[in-house]
Every structure is written in C-alpha cells, then in structure tokens.
Image (cartoon, rainbow, N blue to C red; front, side):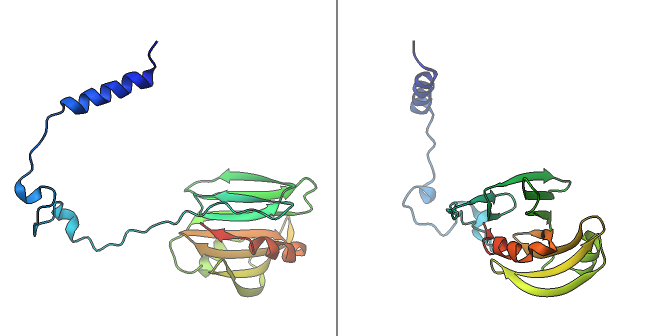
Length: 193
C-alpha cells in the first residue's frame, strides 16, 4: 500500500513538471543588468528591520532550573524545588510566580507591555498597592536600568521590588523584604532574549 507521503511527492513532481513557464523580459532575466529594481516598491525602504538573535538555553548550576519565556523575552535561573505558575492577564500582561512548597522562598514577576523609555511616577503609583516607597536605588538587570526599592503591602507586609523595562515590556519583580539578598542572586541570572 503506497504511503500518503509517496503519493504527495509524485503529485508535486508531476505538477511542477507540467507547469507552464513564463518568459521574463530580457531586462529581468537572470544575469541581466538593469537600472530598475525587480520590486520597485521595496527599493527605497529605509526602515531597518530588527533582527532578533535567538539565544540557546543556558545550563543552570546544580540545584537550579532555567525558566525561559520567548514571548516575554527573558530567561532566569530559579531553585529546582520551586513550582512556577504563569497566570495570563488581559492585554498581554502576565504574572509568573515562583515558590517552594513551604512558601519560605517565593517571588513573582508581573509583566505588561510598556512603550515608554522610563517608568513614570504615575505607573509606580498605579501598580503599587502602597504609596510608601523607601530606599529606592538604581541598579541594572542585564544592561537595563532598574529601580530597586522597598514597599509595604497591607496583606503581605514589607516587600522588596525591582522594576525595569526591556524588549517593550515593564517587569515588576517582587518578593518579601527578608529575601532581598536572595532575590539579588536570582536577578543576577536574568538574561534578555
């Protein structure tokens, strides 16, 4: 019994063998010199086309896994005893939570599309549950300018936050204040894709 692949292959050969040929004018024939572009509507395109470099997965250190999200353009190492959960929200936003079984170590990343080059004060006020921001410092996350600070959440208590912009998104990383140094270690493994 012939396979479907064999039948499709024979059909394609017959189709192209019997397809009519079209003669090009001498000015467009292969090897012909011409002052006119073949596709004149594309000849004067000046807008550069962004080329995205695909980065291979990294090898995490022992005891860690790599979380990679091509849509949100980042990868990060996290302890291998953590459970990761992606919660999709409206308008291409999402919250990604990382927590171990005892909830003794946990952090979350809230991501939203963001077109501004800097994080506005209105954005800080709109996304924070508290208006209290203390010890705000400027750091970098994989080359991106970031704001690290402490905030207070009415139900969770004192929090450590790192906010930054990259690849058209605003990233808001949050954990408990007592895990500040631990979060810094996680953020040092952040790489944009």
